Image (cartoon, rainbow, N blue to C red; front, side, top):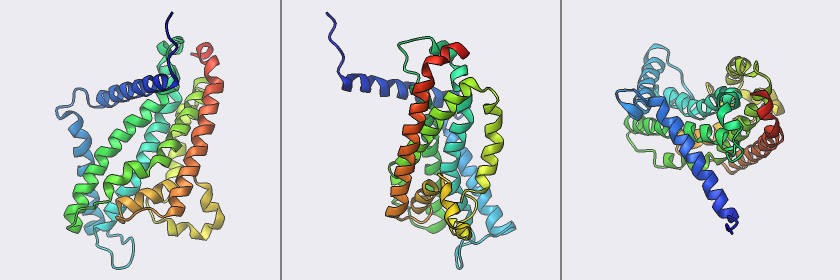
Length: 266
């Protein structure tokens, strides 16, 4: 008689599958490139160099009075890193189930691992971006940003938020094909109402309305570590975890409810 697997064994196999899928996805992005995954480091470095030149020489923008002219490039990139993770995940999610139709009919495959795998693959890309930001910040400010390596741990709430969003969009996208075409324009509009291109203080005139944007606390946590070089405020960290947790649970429930019907629509 075959022994029943323990819950811990099943959980370990589940996350092993998530890792295998994420690694395959990450490697596929750079397959055929001359530099391989190093491309993911070179491109952010190139963007940072261009941002630094443009916003310090051609169109100088000050984040705050007395700030170095190159600070806006670092400020912008520190907000774009977490935003890009979310945008990448949200763009791919609606077509995820239809794009993996061969797995949908396999009962033994836990489909909820697919959304998690693309989130994890995006976070691997995030680590490359953080590495580029670490180097440039060190060169610009003359001191290494020692707290920056804590960013992946501090962004647990953001990770949960992305997972919940991908579970939700993947489930809905399996039934509504047009969702994939709508996500791109919606993300563009969302970017301009999120404090990525400008400080969060610019939104204070909106009063309580500014708290309706679930990405705001995640951007604040990222900026504290990646740009200001300080530990995130307890308020921002707590809100980030709560928002991420609620989104993850909600997205997972929607995905689990829709899962039995996937085979009928793909």
